[in-house]
Image (spheres, rainbow, N blue to C red):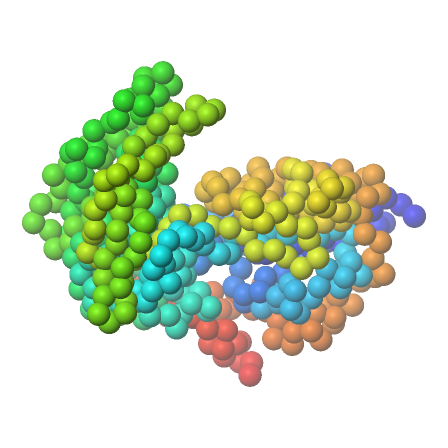
Length: 466
């Protein structure tokens, strides 16, 4: 038989996860000269595009334009989307081996990391993941409630997600009304009593993880002031020496922006967002109602550690901050996938450059990973492109070498029939485009990009399915 991937023997590839890493992988396959391939993309949600839809802040509409590239990939006649189909529930790895030569997993990092401190599970203590998914209309999170009657809120973390949460809490309803934020979130934020938002970083201003555009936006809010304390902003000797030895333009730019926040970016504003540095939470304290009422923190000191890394060491100084609502934003981790070896310490599927390997380092033929489940939760949307290309290039190499599954059938209709039997309510890409058009039409009359459907049932109703 001819080599898999030839015109007479096309390759059949399954991609699990319809986020950027999945679409970039499909793009790479289709752009490879002399490769004949069919790509089926599965996602447990009816909607594709992953965190572009459910994670990107609603007031960052331009970032979401990347979906036009994904739509172009999906228009390839050799592309199919099986939405509302969950790996591990509707289909298994053994099922996929029956129909595909290779399987590429790009399921992301689905859960948040914990703080590991007393009181973390108290009412009004949440992960930023939950809040972001809630205001973005993720079906799994639409019914959550957040007590926005609290006047003081803390966000633990100094990354872009932490800034997104702070910005959404700080913005006026008018600033959010023209975005695709969900109606229920907009209504809740309209009644918000939040006055002070504290972003807490365990290290100093030179070690913040947010990007320059994100922090710049915090100085452009209509009725919220971003505040930095002069004594916490002053660079410690270790950070100053590191910057002098290895100048970094991005860090310097961020410091320049934050310097303008000393004393407040907009004095007299309705809300204040306080950037606090060199503090680590040690305990969340319950009030009379059983929910969070304050947070105990320890002051840190920066020191040069092994390998030249700047780390923080707790001092004996403690403070207590009165806050009634807490969001932790200290990173994400992947979830183990049935049938694949998992590195629990790193929160990723065990792999070498995208090839899945077992605990002994032996290659698991036919299985590959890309995106956050491959490398961990690092980078921005565009980072997934070279990451996906790296894995797909190895997949193509393995196809040529005959290292792949030996499926019983790669017939398109047989796969369609099998998946439909397992999940009668599967969603095709044409179905998604119909849902997408309905959301956009609903948004037109309200001068919004779209009005999102936030439940699977609503989406099926658009398609006139029971």
